[in-house]
View 1 (spheres, rainbow, N blue to C red):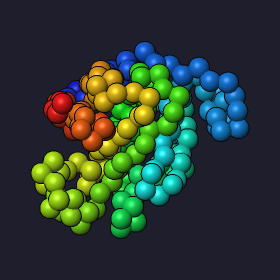
View 2 (cartoon, rainbow, N blue to C red):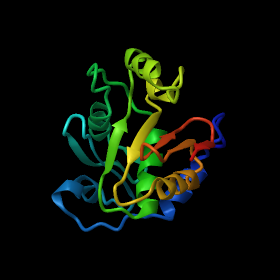
View 3 (cartoon, rainbow, N blue to C red):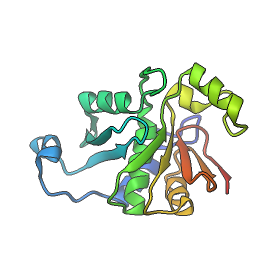
View 4 (cartoon, helix red, strand yellow):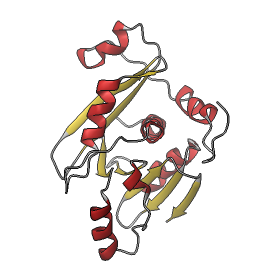
Length: 188
């Protein structure tokens, strides 16, 4: 697989994962990967301050996405205002997981925004100039994340190192936007 139209290469994402390989002891929460003889896993850890939900999920093992795990992540990242679920682009999940590994954090991401319905995006846009009219959140290709143990600068630097899409720094609001669109950066 070569370079895509968004500038994301499989090699760039694989490099980010190679640099942050997870060495995990077998536990029940990681059993699926070890049952399959997993040497390479991808894990996503998040919580939502809005819904109170938490997720700690291995969603990829030895080159294969785990369908049920991805479905749970999609539900978790739904538009909580409308309860609408959309498939989250797997490239976005990979960027999030690689970013988490690169910052070497033991806490889960706080998910501020995953999928947004057009109605939610329009409402947020009416309240803030920082919300894009054609936001990648509406395509399931973006997430707004926070880690209390890392600065916006640290998180943005790690996400940018993935070279997988857009990275926005929102220091005043203490979060980082990541997406699998065109590789670009913005904010302070």
